[in-house]
Amino acid sequence: MTDSDKTDVKHSLLSNLLALLFGLFVGLLLFLVADITLGILKNRQARVVIRDQDFYKVGIVRDDDLGYRILPDMTIPVTKTEDGEQIYSVVYNTDQAGRRVVPDSAKAGEADKFLAFFGCSFTFGEGVSDEETLPNQVARLMPGYRVYNYGAPGYGPQQMLAMAESGFVRDTIPEPKGIVVYTIFFGHLNRASGRMNSALMQGRHFPYYRVEKDTLVRVGSFDTARPGLHRMMSFINRSGIVRYFNLNFPPLRNKDYELTAKIILEAKHLFSQQFEEIDFYVLMYPAIPQLNHSLDPVFEYFRGQDITVLDYHELPYSREEYALHPQYDMHPTPLLHKIMANLPAEAIENNNP
Image 1 (cartoon, rainbow, N blue to C red):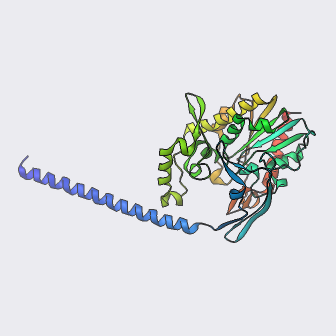
Image 2: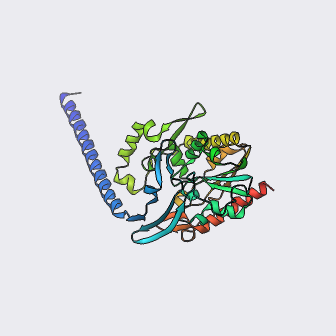
Image 3: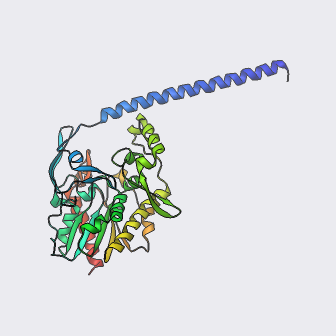
């Protein structure tokens, strides 16, 4: 190769390198413009949410074991308004253990069996009265049980397990035999595994469990046990693209389904030790399409484990009938709670003739 040829090669390599750098610069510039633009659009989409007597500020306190808990012996009127439109106006009442009251339940001494519900705001009954919650509507159908509502907004399966581990449930249920119902929807995978849309919001202090050598262990809370990942998620969540398209991180993996299942199985195992006799049910609500994916990979772990799965996520769903507001609030209406109450009540009666 002559000196002239070598010079031409160097010039060609330099030109290609400059073209590559220019392309990267333009690509980065376009990305930044898109990110900033979508961030501005996302901020403009933000709705003005007003809660008179905000339950999340006055009704919930930080708790080292659960992340947060509901205050006991509380009566609080709650009104939620979005963009000037009232979504709901209800009153929440809790008992001495911080559970949502179940007014139509059998009272102490009237029943020798319990029916305990666990889960999130679907179980708690966000936006509906005490009488309209799922546990209370089941209580009307099953007068032979004393019904308890351990649900709380934002909770995942790890709170049920943490309450079982601490003995809180056994200490607050006097009946020796009964039924446990865990209500679930697809979003509970995010809460159990601590994905970004949960761990950066209400779930930052949630109990953090993981599977080590096929054994479930608790390793603190999401923010304290994973500081590096927590900082990374905080950085990623600043992106306008991420926020505009509601992207989540990290991606769901098979081990997240396994973790969710093992948390529920361990809670069931502990309850079986703490009470003389229990039956265990998992009830899956239908939801809006983006939250209404199958949980069959979780339910596969329950085969042969004496868990009855009541999966109604494919129930035809109507936002107008089943959501508190078709745009602003996807929590279940009293009608959907009533429909869902009939389904487990029938299943429980068939299994306990």
